[in-house]
Image 1 (cartoon, one colour):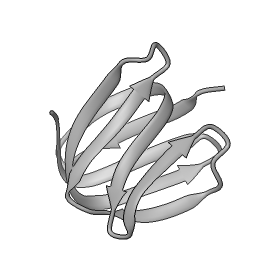
Image 2 (image 1 turned 135 degrees about the horizontal axis):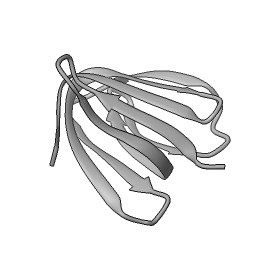
Image 3 (image 1 turned 120 degrees about the horizontal axis):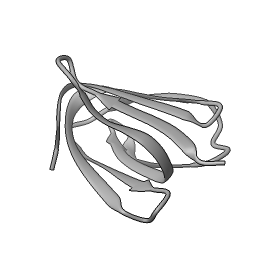
Image 4 (image 1 turned 180 degrees about the vertical axis):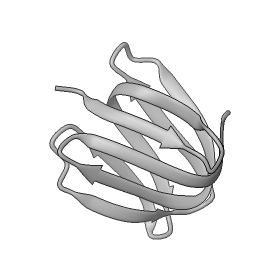
Length: 85
């Protein structure tokens, strides 16, 4: 079962869909999310979020401050500013 992902900024949805992996930069370092990951809430640091969709394509999103939430294979990333890189 893939991850259901939503990446939004304060003004728009930047990317959403199904993914097999997400790598994001948090204030404590990089975090990798795969299916079955335990629930987590983390503060994002400024940096790139890499989303590997179910076809293997890597989408890069530049995100500036916000948070990442994981619960039951649903990943939500909310950033102050975010755009496809």
